[in-house]
Length: 311
Image (cartoon, rainbow, N blue to C red; front, side, top):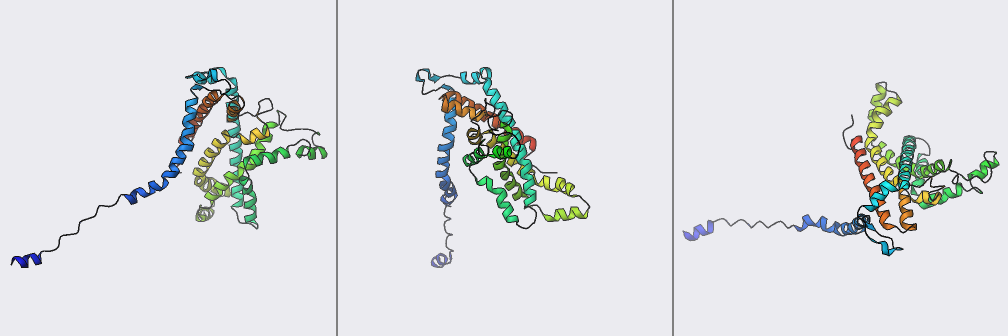
C-alpha cells in the first residue's frame, strides 16, 4: 500500500525560476554610453560656466585671477550699460525675426499644401535654404550686399540709389538688411514643421465646414489654426532660443556693427571671452542669458497652454 501511495502521489510542481533582471536593464545598458557622452559634453561645460561665473579668470592677467563671488553679476546689472543695450537689441531681434518667420512660414506651408503642378519642385525650393549652413548663408548675403558687385550696384544701374552704397555699414539700413538675410534661412524651418502638421488635418472637417457654409477664412480660423497650435508654439519657442543665440550670421555680416547697432548679447559674450579673454565675466553673462531664456520659456509655455486641449 505504501508503494502504491508513493506511485500515485503527483509529482511536485516545477520550481518557478526567478525572472532575470537582465532584459529589464538591457535598454538602460544600451543607452548608457550615449548618456555618459552627453553628460560629459553637455553637463560638464554648463557646470564649468556656472563655476567660472563666480571667478575672476583672465589668462592674460593671471595675477587677478581668483574667487570673485557675485562681483561679476554686480558689474553686469549695475555698471555695464552695454549689457542692457545688447539685451534690448536681442529682444528686438528675436521678436522681429520669429514673428516674420512664422508669418511667412505659415503662408508658404499653406501654399505648398495645395495640389498644383510642380508641387514637389516647389516644396524642394521652399525648403532648400534650411539645408544651407549658417556660415554659408552669411557668405552668400555678404556677396549680395557688396557695394561693388552686389544688389546695390544693380539698383544703382537702374537709377535706384547711388553707387558705393553699403546697407551693412549704414545704421539706418543694417537692421533690415540683416533681418532679410536671416529670414531667407529661417522661414523654411516654420514651413517644414507647419506643413508636416497640416498633413494630419482630416479633409472631412473642411468638407463638413463647406457644407455648413463656412468661408475659407472661418475654416482657417476654426479648423486649421487650432490644429496647428502646438506646432506653432513649439516652433516659435525653438526658433526664439536659436535666434537669441544667433552669432554666426550677425558676426559674419556686420561683426556687431556699425557702432554696435547689431550686437546681440551672445555676440557680446563671444567678444568678451574671445577678444578680451575675460572668461569669468563672459561666464557670468552666459549664466544671466541662460536664466533669462529659461524664465521666458517657462512663462511662454504656461501662457500658451502647450499640450492642452484646444477648444
